[in-house]
Length: 302
Image (cartoon, rainbow, N blue to C red; front, top):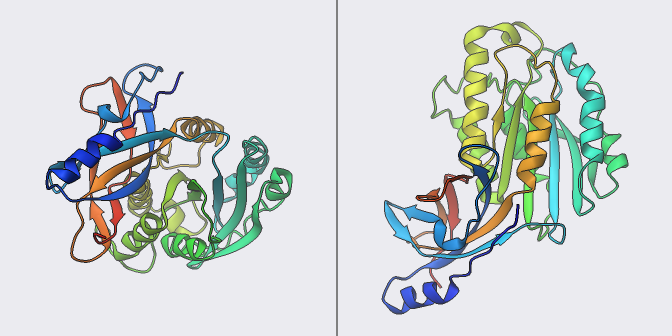
């Protein structure tokens, strides 16, 4: 597919001159076909951004490719069931498939922390060696969303064009935040990812212990994983409530997503205080969809 980039900086400047103040904000977005397999040519003017139900000027849509830096962290649940063991070779092959510009890290989620087994490196073979058998202890996945936050705290400061986390987990939150879309622990993980500009992809994999085969806990675990991915601009993958036959189709889909990612720059309305603001990013007319974060960090006006 040919990529087309639209530049609307002049248009945005005219908007500023007409009394519509704004600050430039960037977001990583992924183009997807709405029907079939082909993505039509999309330019900046084809994308709409709403903040507070009001349209904001789109300034630029820049494709991300081999010349743009990429950091990808593989977050694996240390309480995964034995079915995970058969996926280790698949995960290693996938890491080795990453493009040359990708820095890859590996960490294991355990009791709200992220134990890094491979630091960010372009040596994909070395990164793949950080993938090991999980400990498999029941309850180690007590809060994967805190583990995500811990991983983001350990993420080295860099000017990477995009940051991606691929989180393999049951999604079960065991600290009692409630089975609701307003779970504070899940929301904290989402907030940490949004503030750091990390797009999170999630793959459901059941955990050890009673919670791992509790239908209602599993249901909400998958709901939480989907919420996390949806709100950060990623994708969530699961097949039923059991272990996937293979991670391969999910990993292939994530790899395909990486080929169709862009930096979208638009003029956001500043608030009195800097912080996360809800936005709606969509393609109103072309036969294409867009995966984008549900909130963006908006600084105060200069």
